[in-house]
Length: 335
Ligand code: SF4
Image 1 (tube, rainbow, N blue to C red):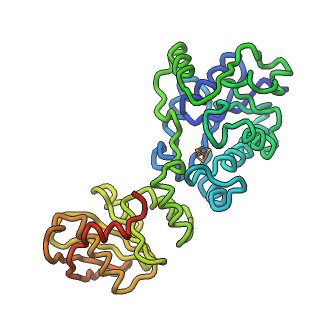
Image 2: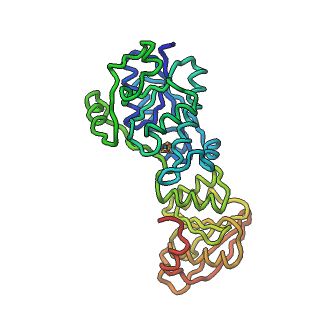
Image 3: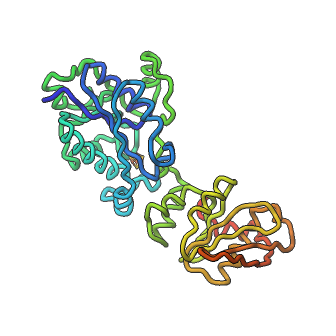
């Protein structure tokens, strides 16, 4: 077996420590990182800044896989179900390990290194889940978990004498104190995503995602939109997204597409709103009422709202009474 490994490096504390411990054993290492539209620590969805930083600090080459497109299939129908929110952690890990396995074979590496800690995460780091993930990814005996290694049977690289098991740890459970101590000892003090940056574990985001999957098509663009603004379900086929600040107003405008309608108040500063789906006069009226609620005119009796169809330079005006708070909450998706 070759003394070369592929480390799964999220940039969080655990994977950074695991990579460090293996590097200490003079193993040739490459790191890989997976990004999806559901990561909330990426720069414009292109690079995970924390994993790049960790890789740079340790002098390890990093390869980033943007897996959003294929990952959506995992989210739609996870064989092992979801966790507390819309996180399909077991299927997610299997999917990522399969990609890691392929990369391991392509680069001539002999095994995989991860920062998993037995019992730390309720869904994917239980012993039974770990066994399933290892079996389904076809990596039996080839996943080294330096932080918990001594709680598992020896892996192939340990048996081959490439890895010294005595230098590995036996951490388990949710306390992160041992990791923090170790990080201090070895001088790692910058780990921006200590508990992961996955929006699928976020309750509010998961409510939006579930709503989208119930009523609409989950594709990359729709998934990106879930990260922006306040969301309102106006009918089975229509939803309104309202920007929360200037940046989101501009971003929403960049998602303006065929058959969408964009709205803003004529005489008051406020949010931009994007209306998507099957649209009729009643839905436009309701959208305008919601748009005014997020403007400086929300206390007025009547407010003029400008709206436009995609590809049409004309703007139309509609005068509406701002929606009341109680009624607004009926349409709100998530908190
Ligand atoms: S928390 Fe998110 S990224 Fe991590 S295993 Fe679960 S679904 Fe995958």
